[in-house]
Length: 592
Image 1 (tube, rainbow, N blue to C red):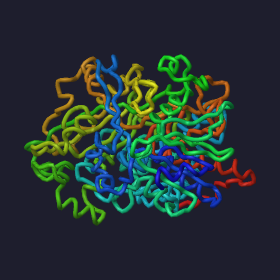
Image 2: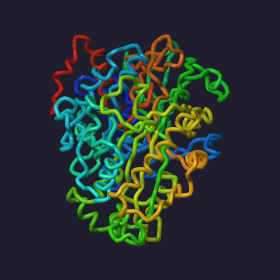
Image 3: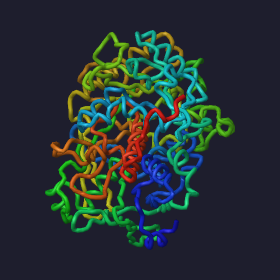
Image 4: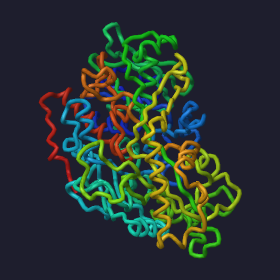
């Protein structure tokens, strides 16, 4: 739809943000032909481009026009450093700008959500049907197909149709170091610990993003309008604090307002940075902060923008220069054409047939461990406070620098030299304790917000990462990986003491791209709760937040699967409010 055409229409729902959650809502809410839905997306329809479809293309998305390209404020805990955060700016959002891994976390993660909001419908048992409803699982690696995975859903989950021999060697080495094999990290009947291949959100070797899975199949519905290059600038609230519309700026910079029908709703799906930002520019947030920025306060809600969580990551990387078995084996050697900035045409031809190294995100082998334990349990965690604190992602490549995000974004394809072969283990604090916040830089909604990442402010996260690096080194010492490394380049073999490793962690930590929590779900008695158990914004009428920002606590996995499940549940809640007689029977969802 054209931006000018939507101003004369009244919508039942305005989906603000065409990312992962927004695509789910656009699909599900337009199943009822009489329900009129508008989606506003600041980015473009770029989700079909080759650099998006190939998981390796992510490195070309970093810091491009398809990326919001956020930087955190300098942090004392990081010795004055900023952290670069990629967020997808296109239909499909960050499902187009992630590493496609499909790890839900554990059952205990979701039981903790239910405890946080006092509603058992958010627990693992009741969230599992939504994960399955979203999923079309064609992975061959699963142990729990049927019970733990869905079939026939919009979102394809599969195995990467390419396996580097160094990645296979990593799994052997992990077992040699005392780890156990884990065939399915989404099987909640067993511990999350162990090592294996990660399931991925791919279809035929290509990225399966939310825009392709959920939005494209329903774009022909007459009751759905989608406007791209439309950046939302505020929710319009009347004197009773009910939403009556959404203000946005179109591709030409013209300010417009999309109107809601009587009892219509604005559904915020801008993600953990965008959703609190829009609420605050609309006058909903911490009173003192809004007043400092010159924003008229509509609703004092101190939790808006607070509780920011992300996965901090560090790495161990080894060069394989001079090792004959490793020569030419690295992912980087197979993807990049020599010293040019171009993709290897052989790899590209393979990719178009759904095969080869371009089908891999590069980090689809790994595992989860308790960093403080020698013996790893095989049974599921019983509480959210007693779970694996480290996730490993193995890369069959040597990294360019110890900061695994911003420097790769700047240097990988631009590098004029042939990249040396090698291997890397990225170490991620899977369940961090540190918290940050999103704040307004100004009252202007087009100004990027201030992001205080909070990384490593809790010493427990530093301890996890230091211990995690030590365990990663134990894996690297095993015979299976001996042919693929000559020496450790980062942090370097001479970095051995806890103090030296802590310094390395603080000076090189980067994001594993899992920002959540800034509009958290909570009980009425929780003054930091932003939404209730039906995702309605506290104190407002006709406004819900339905994305990753409602997560009270970051699950120990990747966040795209959780965001899909939240949005599926949100659509179900909304549809039941439209038609109270509609009762969802989870057993009706297809299973594999």
